[in-house]
Length: 362
Image 1 (cartoon, helix red, strand yellow):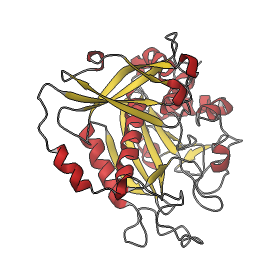
Image 2 (cartoon, helix red, strand yellow; image 1 turned 180 degrees about the horizontal axis):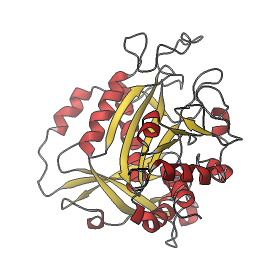
Image 3 (cartoon, helix red, strand yellow; image 1 turned 90 degrees about the vertical axis):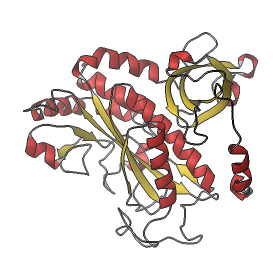
Image 4 (tube, one colour; image 1 turned 90 degrees about the horizontal axis):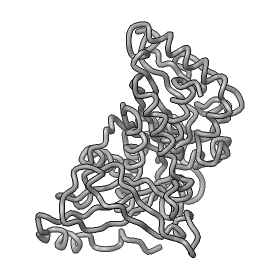
């Protein structure tokens, strides 16, 4: 299969070094398409350097090519909501995260940010913090796990988690490049590690307050796809990339309010978990873009997961729906980890569900 990695990148570099007028800025508008899982992007030239989203013009695109409109009425609006430094072409250039709106100025079906922002505005007085542990799997161009034998399987899981060595981790160069690119862009990426499944990795974003957790995670995903593109490798957020006795992929979310983070906050944590136990089905619906159908393959009660059918919680229990970290239980304050969201979840939907259940009692 022919792809861009076969091109000589040194030829590209001689053009990238060409001087550009100081008042010019390339702004790449990034948005979530109609799948609710994939991101798209296109670039325009500005005659100024923007410093905030409201500086940027509203733009549009062909929604009929992104599963968001009919061809007879295809123009779909892009409304800038967050700006990041562009780690790919650098300079004054920016990545612009956008909300999507239909011709009638109503949000598209995949625009989950609007309702999430409404919930965050109501809950801002308790200062909700979020952190997401984003797992992903690297695939080759044949969509097989990167580095796996073309026929058969690698050795059983065990040596790969946080592993070191050429026979234990595949794709470290991609992980390192993504980490640096996110830091350059201004994303609050706070860690990374190789995961249990060979060719699977995780990175952590947060803590972020309110709506910013969704903004930063979506842009970090875009950056990951772009980095992997340069290496000729595919990024998969499939919650169960390999059938059988192999770990799936999640996006565990750590959540707290100011009250949970202060002395005796454990009681607030326990109250929140009690509320979650009464709305398990609603959260399962919100925790993957297909209403729980993707998570059915992952949340089996095996491979460090809980059952999709029942709610459970426990201290240091990675087989529970919600885990209270050992350190939190000992200190009596902190946060809890909801382990149910799938790796391809919409972070806006996940964060909104937590706020509405745990804070707003909706």
